[in-house]
Length: 237
Image 1 (cartoon, rainbow, N blue to C red):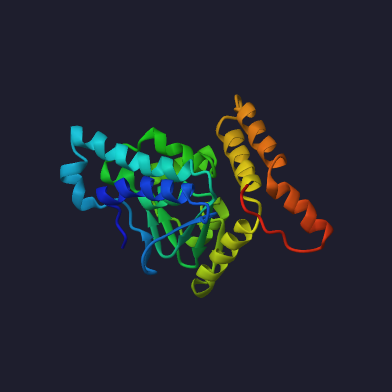
Image 2: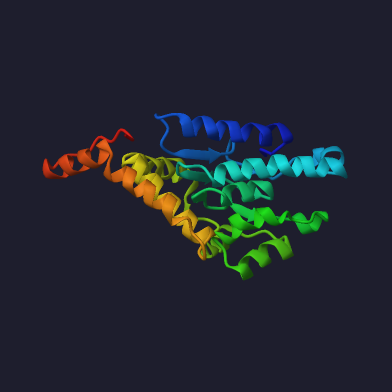
């Protein structure tokens, strides 16, 4: 069921960093192995040793590092969700820019049912998509949300038949990847900054990203392709 253990939490930031540094990677897609679950959540078998006393802070730091790496990724991220998407798995999906889910997907964060105080640092990804009231419903009830509820709330960006999920997810990734990488990054960063810090956004940094687009080879390529009525070939430069 793709339960997330300490080794997986530790590995994820490095995987994201490697993808960010690779010019050949333009979009990241996160998915669970098989089709039973994106992830059933954190591996409960580790809780007695890794999530008790002082060790709990270290374990939470590993989880937080993984969530932060995905949420702060400069490149677009898509969670492709089959089946159960629970606990830390749902949190990880909510850190992504898009969540494409198969019909029958089930979401939930049952921390309160396990007596776990939910780290306040992990509330931000939820509030980036859900209202405060919806976030409270997720966290205070610990209940499961079916595919229709998830779509209505925005937990799922799109709901698709299971046999078309991968194709549609790849189509979205390709559509984004075909665009100018610097312009994509500028747009993503602008949305993230203005939604996360609406009262004091770092507009100076965002302006630098826009300037980089205007000075790029891709900007010239985009204009040339438009005039020549052909598809542009962007290089991220």
